Image 1 (spheres, rainbow, N blue to C red):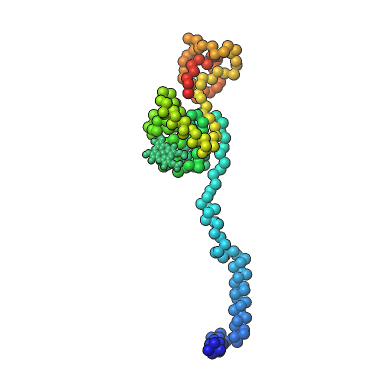
Image 2 (image 1 turned 180 degrees about the vertical axis):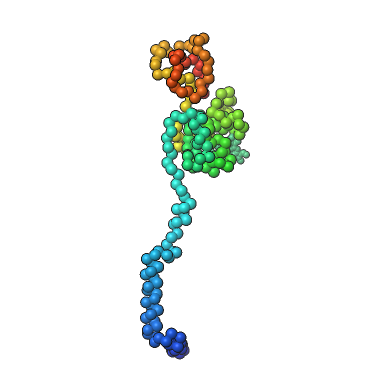
Length: 214
Ligand code: HEM
């Protein structure tokens, strides 16, 4: 039976290719060998490229950059609108890199409104109101302060601290007035400390006066 099949095959090979069976098999083997060599050279095979997908999906976050002291105004630029910048958020004046939780704090996320801000008051009061999006925790009750403390612990354990919020206090100017916190005199104009240019203050003000607890 098998022999008959082999005979038929040999006849068919000779009939269709005009080659003797021996020549036919030699040519076929050579063709196969050439195919494997060529496909190996160009890496065109599709079975040893599995890892590529995961390489594309997992883009590792850049390591957190320490910012030192920044003003609340400067912190705003880290609210996630610029995807090249880290996503930052502050609690009690401490700034954390929350880039790993972009799904929470990034644009469109449920807590995006906290990004780029000190959200202490909002977190303490569990509030999303605009007026509470501030680091001002004055007048909070004990439960709210406790809630805030819990949030701080959570952030401390989950995220890397990258800086602190610079308090905008009146600049005292380098020249030391040796008196310890002399009371501001009547002459001192009670100007709110805006983005202090740090120069051009001809009147030397001791300015240590008002101490707001923050
Ligand atoms: C209906 C009410 C709320 C629900 C169902 C809810 C649900 C959640 C859930 C499921 C998470 C994710 C927890 C995790 O995977 O670690 C989360 C995280 C968070 N929630 Fe809420 N939440 C609610 C209200 C609030 C409110 C009122 C605030 C503050 C004003 C808040 C602030 C946060 C913050 C800051 C995180 C992220 C914490 C982190 O960075 O790990 N949530 N919330």
